[in-house]
Length: 53
Figure: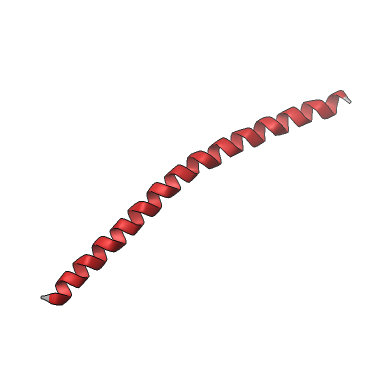
């Protein structure tokens, strides 16, 4: 009976770790999206400045 409790505890711990990781990655995706948009805008601005000079 003791091993059953250990198995349940390990399953819950692994599930919690996976859930925390997925939640953190979900937020990182939004940060990466914002960085990509900023890089795109900066690239377009630099391209227009090089054409003028």
